[in-house]
Length: 431
Image (cartoon, rainbow, N blue to C red; front, side, top):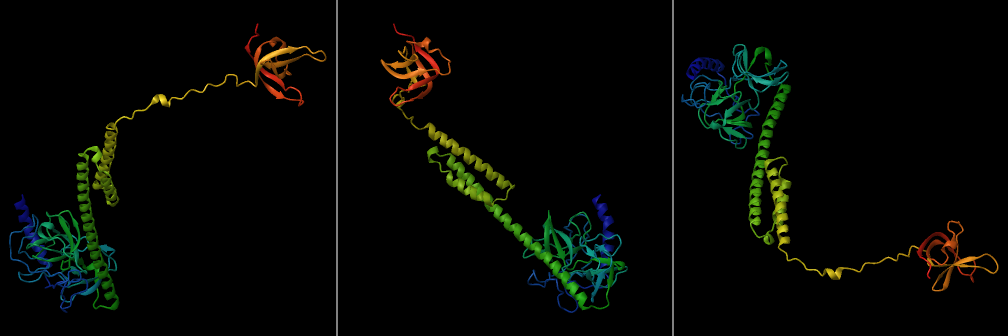
């Protein structure tokens, strides 16, 4: 099935690629004037210069997988071996403007051609070459976006990816089963944009691209406005490339910092294990905890390493509790003299609730009303009365009682009076 597919695809690929190579185009990066166009790096400094395309190799086994054009077939941007790839732009590229709302440039000059992912909008200035039928080859600063497989290209160095083999497929999307936009010779420099799985996403200044005649309006000559628009477009696209480099640099720095934190976490984990094997009174977990706290502040929350650090922190807490418990159980119990600590209980006076305690005595007066006194030890303490009438004091004559009531002393030279509010019998009369 693969052999049949290759046999069917090969003639179509050859025809499509051959049609794209007509009109004797020159490269995007080296116009007839000899001056490098702005936006394409000259050799020597990849970040400000023009990637050289190298030379095409003779036919060789295709390393780019099924669906790739066979080496030796005519292709956009390449002529015979030993010559630089051609970009499909004539020797005198002209300024032009896109006249449709939005369009994606085609990889080949035909209505059924696949398209690059770049999008051109109405009014955008481009440069075009000589018409090829109903299509015009198009040029953009730094070229169009495509993909090369990491297996056949180096990692970015100073923002440039280079092909590492001959006839490396430059694809309009990261899919090896489709026909490539063109084949690149060894050591072709490409502007790095990003990486997607096994693919480098890049810009190739000499990538051919095509717009239909009705999608673009060429100008017979340039003017200051067109040149300014082209310069602004170059600035934007170069900024896009430089932003991609800065993003990759940040990602590499973050990855390096994360790797260092991962190593530090592994070392702290081993230190904790070593301390946990020591006797409980020799364990020093405080230094491990301090270092772990500092590391936690640096790790991104939600990451695997942050979660592992939190687990280690919990293990340290448990180990410290265990060490403390072992220390307590190993201590000699303290003996205490409990008898010396026992205090004599304080016994409350049960009669303290009374205002007065004593024996009630009835007295007949020779003149005036009879009266009662409360005596103790044969000495009168109070004259007793019950103004409320609650108690008949005669019933308690000769009885020891406790009285709660109000005290008064009407005259200085007289005994104090006690008006009974509540009375309680303590002892009946003595014989």
